[in-house]
Length: 235
Ligand code: URA
Image 1 (cartoon, rainbow, N blue to C red):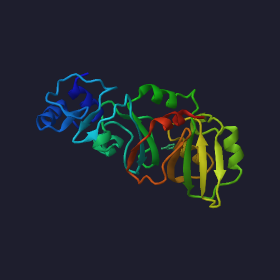
Image 2: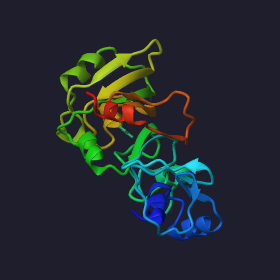
Image 3: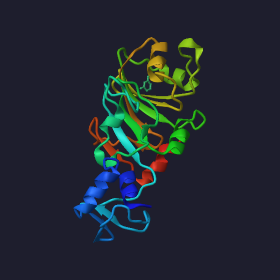
Image 4: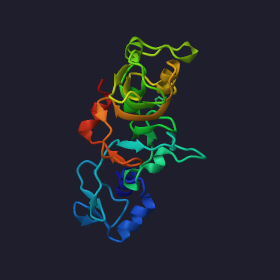
């Protein structure tokens, strides 16, 4: 693969022209030797490539955990609101990234951003039943009977039946944890509305078997490392 193509594919903020300029300034090295030409051939697997001394590691796909704040939309483009992609720091940006699944504009928490279409498909497929865990705060106290009602499969507006969901009560009667195995439109809000309550705060805290990093500030991202990627699909 050409050096400029390799660097531009891994470091989305750098164009091939940028790489050419960096080579001209002697700021790109291949196996420790300054690269004179940006069109030289390199092996993305075997060569050690660095820009300004920072290694450019080859990743076929990237997986990014974002702690989405309220007011940001899960879309690749939006004329009006800020999108989740605009929160990705330059060093993690690359072509083809998209949010795998949606949270409402007023929902916070774990959004996976990736360029791995196959994994996203597996995660989102209704058949895969990958659990999604939410912290929920409601307007009225949560009736303990909801634990059984949710476990049996609630019928929500329009007659849709939900898959069995796990509701865990907390010491605070206005708060709970809810685990869903599907992702219907506005599902959590509609489930509580069907029970005469209203969601006032919603945050996704876990996708599959991977927790949102509790240290990750709202609006911040971190790259999910290889060993954790498969946890995203864990049931
Ligand atoms: N359920 C909702 O109602 N909203 C979300 O954003 C996610 C799940």
